Length: 308
Image (cartoon, rainbow, N blue to C red; front, side):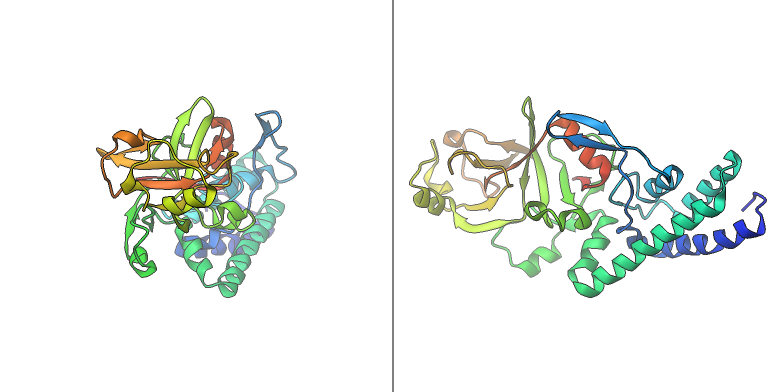
């Protein structure tokens, strides 16, 4: 480092830079790093609210940079070197005349806590290794594959995605992969992959692509003693997946469907004129956000934002 540091500052910077070096070798160590969100969304007022940065504002900035720009749940990038982020942060503190020792000590504590949590999670549940690794990967299990495929086949089928930064604007066709650390406490979205299927005056609509319910459309309609208008015979054998936690008053009103048409996703198109298609998928329930709400959720890192 080019700046002139006192002995105490050099002593605290060395272990901090060693932790950064370890993170550069294994970026998944940062996937359990937690920050302080700059904004939250108030569901009652429908507005964004600023959050006090607290005592460690500069530490929070460093954690946000280490987290790939996410303010609360880390989505570290394998292309952004932790060592450079830490060095830039220390240079910044030095030039502003802010005491380095307490800031560096707090960063060490946060990084060590994140690494310890990652180790415990991997030891407690083997699946967490893949979950944490997927946070920094742009390759995920392809969610649009035929539901009849075996789980081993699904694992072999990969979909290359462009991973977008937390501040990127969401649009129809994007995928949202729930952050494993956030979603473990959010049962409806645990280990979920959602497709943003529609954007209109009521907000954005998402459909969960990876939770089949084990029933066909015919079985759902028979059990509910209801009928879906304009449904064709060939559609009745299609499987129904759980699209999300938001349900309407009846089973039929809670149904949504998508199918691909000329490489585009058609949302709730006219069933009467639809030609037989392998790509047609039915869903019960959905997820909805206002544009501001989803913007804040993405900013916080609740969702890994990807684009095919």
